[in-house]
Amino acid sequence: MFAFSHCRDVVAAVSNAGGFGVLGGTAYTPEQLDQELSWIDDHVGGKPYGVDLIVPARYEGKGEDLTMSDLAGRIPDEYRGFVTELLAAHDIEAEEAPRFGNAALSGNTGKDLLDVAMNHPIRLIANALGVPPDYMIKAGKENGVPVAALVGAKEHAVKQARAGVDLIVAQGTEAGGHCGEVTTLVLVPEVLEALAAIGSDIPVLAAGGIVTGRQMAATVAMGAAGAWTGSVWLTTEEAETAPYTKEKFLAASSRDTVRSAGRTGKPARQLVSDWTQAWLPNEGGQKPLPLPLQSMLAEPVVRRIDVLAAQGHPGAQALATYFVGQGVGLMNKVKPAREVVREFIEDYVAATERLSNSLPD
Image 1 (tube, rainbow, N blue to C red):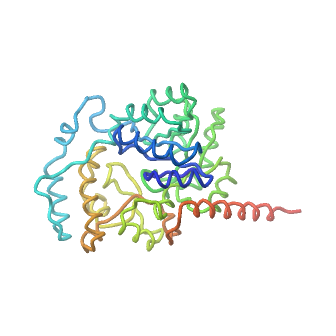
Image 2 (cartoon, rainbow, N blue to C red):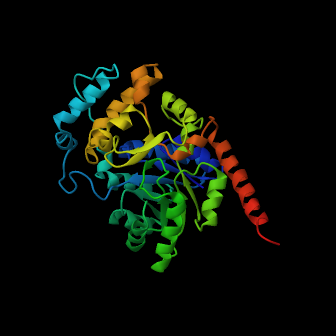
Image 3 (cartoon, helix red, strand yellow):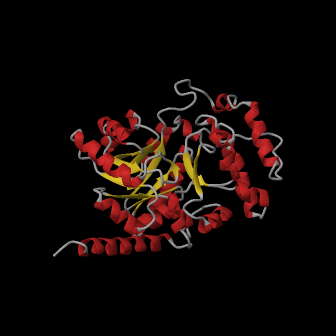
């Protein structure tokens, strides 16, 4: 069981409990990532962990050698005005000097972050939003580190296999964060059949809405080699989830999520809020900017919203959101990460026993 998290404490706790923690490293500077990985090294005692870097195949300004200032200049004034009006409607004053987040999702820092990661004893490097760049696949082979790729469609899995990745994560639409439109239950066998058709035996992990061991057992029964999880760690004791957002997760049902491009410019499943709804053009909202302009516009604002929401601001609480999958309906209690791992194991064993007992004598 692989556990993706942006929080180093979760990664270390999962690996120490017998799982495989994977740190989301895209938002860090190279110096920050080195610090985070050094901390993990000091706390896992040689147990395996990995790093996930998002190096998108397509993004605004690709190949143009743009600075952050150049990219910020491509954010139209009308979008800044839209955000100001949205905040005002929720009794939040806009900052006099608009701030923009970094261009982490532009892929421009991918090589530098990868170099940092490879200087640590990682056992996996993962990439999302397209085929990993050639330098990532080459570095993985040179350092003996498997390269994983997340996909949301069978044809994408075939492209990844032909590009030379070592592991496929078939992520269904139930997943939190960037995801496609095909459900996990359909996507996993589709990917397995598509890979078999080209003679590929690359292992496939199932992802998307998996927050229990019985769900993991179900995907293994379909042929997956294991599960890639993410959302379930957002309500653990170690998670750095914004306080009010964690409360919303605990109270949410599986129907309280939506695929919205309002944070990154790419469709990503997150908790429904006034922010996500404001960026749904098919429902009267504003059309999001392309990646990474949307995240540059949105991230400083949503971080401010998180702070105000934790202070009890009603308007901010209505806007507060974060990436989470449909499995949120089963995430009803704050627990230590090690307990979540233990429950996964117990639940998985019980499910496999039920499968075994269902067979005729």
